[in-house]
Image (cartoon, rainbow, N blue to C red; front, side, top):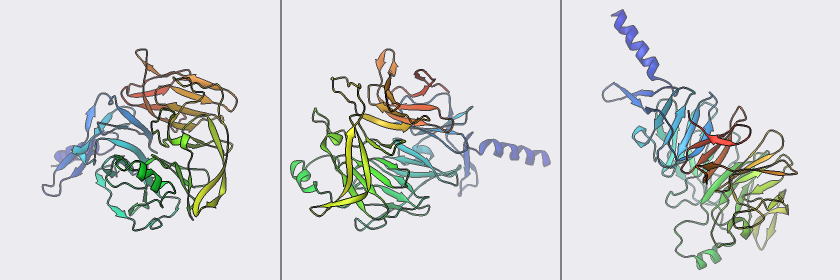
Length: 365
């Protein structure tokens, strides 16, 4: 009896951890249900890289769910384990160590044992449930039907928020009555050094929430590319000098904490400055759009473009790092700096890349 008890005890230890396969009990059969599959490699479509407080790396795919890597073992989780969708868009962690996975079909909380889908509480007005609390988590679910703003989670409730009507809304909907997406769709969420929240939208520019009011910043060139394509606001970054960068290298912005009223609209008060000289796009423009940006350790900023590699700007000069696979430029979704200050890239079709001090190379666990 003692031998059998010890054997079962050791088996349970092996099955409980994000570092190995996770397990939970089936309430109907009182048996152990193992979550996730041990795999030998990551998906080629890894859009998100995130390091948890315990050191584990989480990789979010656009097609294959998420992967957890503890330095030795890769565990793959998908819809069969409780994810709402295998198409992920974000990974976060709360102070208790719970992992949150944003997918195109909802947000899942992982407590180390099970995935739980968070239930949404819709707002009834543009001011309902908007708060600014230090431990709140903010999400976006691009692709969810009827999405019209960000989501705020206070540890108990997930609130679906609504933006106030944009001053260009009537003009936009008259011009584009049948667009497949909403101009309010959230492409990016950013918290600055003061705790203020910024939301990048598909077609209405940037919305700022300072805890008291919501204000808009819109310039056509930030949202719409010269060729007529709609780029949207996919990246927001506050640099070491307190200047803001929105998706492209052409300009940076001095942002006032004050808002201004113009024709009854609440707008962000700002001044626009020239950005980075010497950067050329593939079609000859003197700037590039970037998908994602981070601050480095020396006051520099790193900007990942869609298909023109990565640019590093130290305040004076820029350095270009091409990122290629078999000689071809790859498409990049995100750039991330981990707790050891290592820089990672999430890509559309070629997996994860890591900076080795000189160039970005394909990461193989």
